[in-house]
Length: 396
Image 1: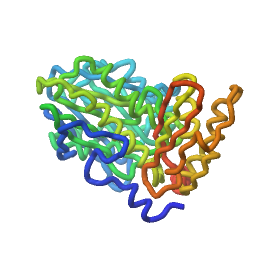
Image 2: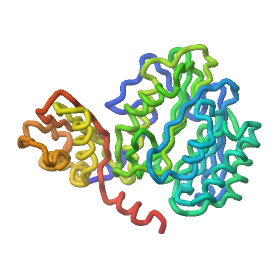
Image 3: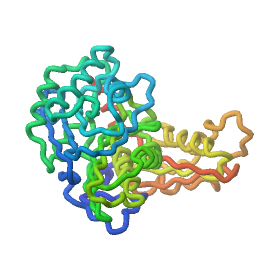
């Protein structure tokens, strides 16, 4: 069962690169995460979407006119209004600013919701002297509730008056919902600086998307779309908390090139991977994280299918929570994923589940299928009492 010690281990420590599964790039220096990469400013304000006076509107701007950018958006068929505005109005390759609110997803809100999201872009653009099409919009929170757009627009104006190079803290606080801690970093290596802010704890299993994540750098990125797509595939598309794809997922990369230096190899992937694992670690009520690696699969698709079946199995997730090394649950989930296949019995010798029951906060699990040479891995969180409580009381 979980304990106070489990909860303590689940909390982040001071350094950013802290997971056993992430290798920090050589020579990387971790800076104050409240300070943005050069050429960027940010800020936040409270407009009433979240109680207790918490920051719930954020604004981020690049002061360099020649910015290269890329966005990856959710593939959920019922995408929220801000996603549709980003697809239809925003120039993904020339995003100068982003406006965000938390506490209201502005999803399933019809034409009015779309118009409200577009108004957020317009108001932010007016406040910053930018065209509407250069402002990305993101929203997160409860689905199906009309957005109090008047209050949000006033919050945008207030946030615009307090933008600063040290505004990453206010901005990252403005995007949080059920997160237990902020997820952010500022790093320097190879003559370039990169900062990032992310949020996410529940409704997590992206597909060519992420939760909300914003990345800024003064590096030269020749092909931002390819760079971002590759890094997202290796990180945010490798995680699950509850197997649920959000209506609002977005990741945005902005690069000014002002440093004149290229983005160091592996830096973006390492940053996004650590942020992805932080999201899993912060999975609503989670106390442990695991990585399932499936090997010897007949195809890449088969390896992926089995890994996700294990990672999303409530029986495996509760075993992780209770430190129960019940390898039979892994075999069952794998077999269910391959239902109808001519599959030989999966025995204990093909499953490495020792760390499922070990006193480690990050558990490595291995599964060999003996059917080929392909492999895949997924990071996932445990499932305990707190997850049920949070989601049973989400709107009440």
